[in-house]
Image 1 (cartoon, helix red, strand yellow):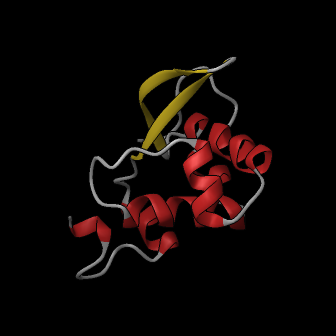
Image 2 (cartoon, one colour):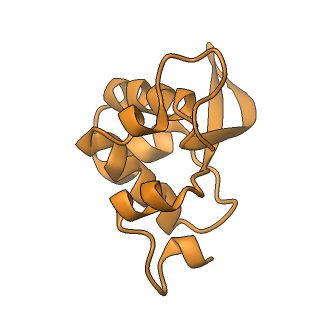
Image 3 (cartoon, rainbow, N blue to C red):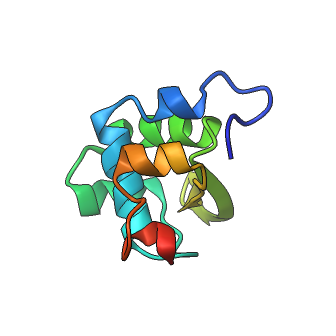
Length: 105
């Protein structure tokens, strides 16, 4: 997917962080089309919500995840994302380029 036009993060910079790699691997493992919000990821990965929310923004700006849905939640809006990488080099960085990996789904 590459870089989202007008955004400051590239896919390469988005992949240059352990938490972001962990988020991407988790999203990829959920299977195609399985959407998750920062709160879901925070709970599943046992990380603070503010940390996950920041990294989700970087991943979205870098084109690694795609916003697919929103829904109101008390005083905010929940944003739902899916894994959105198809570049072979990026899949290799994540270890998702071999047989039986999410890249094959």
